[in-house]
Image 1 (cartoon, rainbow, N blue to C red):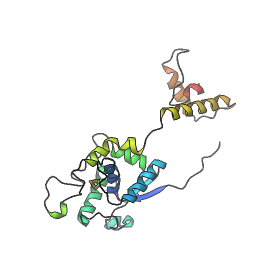
Image 2 (tube, rainbow, N blue to C red):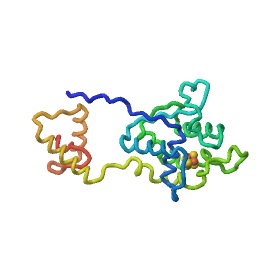
Image 3 (cartoon, rainbow, N blue to C red):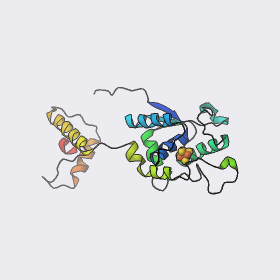
Image 4 (cartoon, helix red, strand yellow):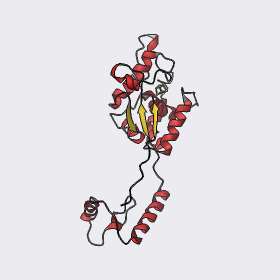
Amino acid sequence: MEKMPVRPADVMEIRPYQLLCLVCRLGRQNQEPYYFEEKLDELQKRIAANPFCVLKLRCDVESTFRFQNPGGADDTPEGKSFNRRRDLTVLQRLGLLPGAEVPACDLLRHLARPNVGIAAVRDICCFEHVTAPVWQGCRHGDSGNYERGFAKAIDVLMPGRDLATREACKKATADAMYQRRVLQIRPHHLLCMACFTANCRPGDNAPILEDNLYEAV
Ligand code: SF4
């Protein structure tokens, strides 16, 4: 069987809070400026080009996680304590540790999970009760930008293929299958084929857009 070439991993290093800023920027209404816009542009471009690219979440913490510390070069101006807490809160809410490497598509889906994802930035980037100037929070915290961006993040950052593309792909792959003398399948595809036909009476089943099980049967 032909082996898939092993590609070197497409890895981009970001601070955890920058993933949220990417989502937040999608919801802005007046082109207000964001910190590290060029990095956010690159992040968005990398995800669009390859949703499986790996995001490495590094933050400015010490002790046993010093190994991954990128320093404070990407800190925003609210101060070190705020920057550290914001990054660590993002990681905690995502169930990740400093230095975690996760495919962008998984990370975004994780972020967007109903009820358990990060749907709002209150208590991460801004606070209801400001107890000291250092906890003033991000200038966009209460803008609603993140929450607006969150509602469309998956559709904008990882749009699926449109119907015409999927139909063209279906036709090309089904045609190719019918031309094969020998059909190469994975063993579990036998189960999928049985499952696909289980509830159909003879002559009842028909091709579907999502896969080529009908053609295999
Ligand atoms: S509120 Fe500020 S720090 Fe938080 S996601 Fe938006 S821009 Fe980033």
